[in-house]
Image (cartoon, rainbow, N blue to C red; front, side, top):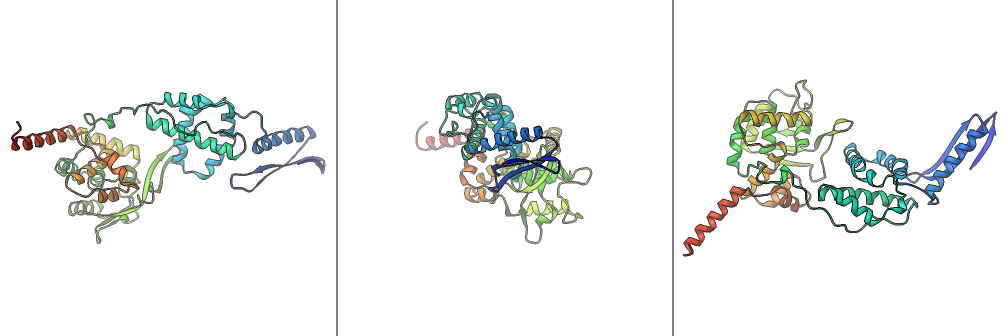
Length: 365
């Protein structure tokens, strides 16, 4: 480190430590006066002390805004940054912003968890705080991680999409028919419905599909792009996981309908278009689907529940769960069991009727 006069000005140079990529972080600047140089030197030496673990006071806010967030901005996709930003703004910073890193206890983390609306929200916030502390430990700024270990999670929040009575799932292919027929000939909405009910694609996969991804000769659909909404606009990105990048077969019905809908479209064109002839935005797709089912008097299915409906109908038709999981692009078959397969109350009533019939046949009335 040094402050020296050069050609009538003052030059400051301080080795602050190491950057996130492991390279040396050497700061150099030339200023007009000696006082400016000394002030700048003191600022950089404070940062060096922080990197070396000698900073006596470093709050959660100081660490996140001065070190952790800038590092993540360079390495993460915007969708991940948006998710982190939300948890920081709504859950972590309101609780811990002005706490020194070393002051936060497991009891404090449990208090944050208790304030979360549900288990998944609490786990996400806890995991993010844990990751932040792991970075702080690696940087030598603190020695313990209060977010490590197990915590008592709040009960799962009950939303409309968690309730069989309020959410509409079409659990058989026979139930899909009225929706497919109502969508027939309706342009972009039919594209969304066919891709949702006949393939179980995620909304971002439907909107990320190009005409060239549909191979009518081989009767396959290639899914590799997701079109997602972020705080910095809509972007096209690779699909969710390696398993999400997949090729799935097309049925006779879907082949015929997609061929009619793609007629005259160039291969490089997005398949689902906006009025301006560009890729349809996620928010507009959601609104279009809502207007469609409402105006047609159909069961209230959404783009998300069409994916669930496809999985449930496949299992109802006797298709092996492993094949359904592969078709949906799941990393783990348990995801298919736990998230995408459920029975409606009416299905359970039918099952109870079957049990009654079997008991009667056995002489038990």
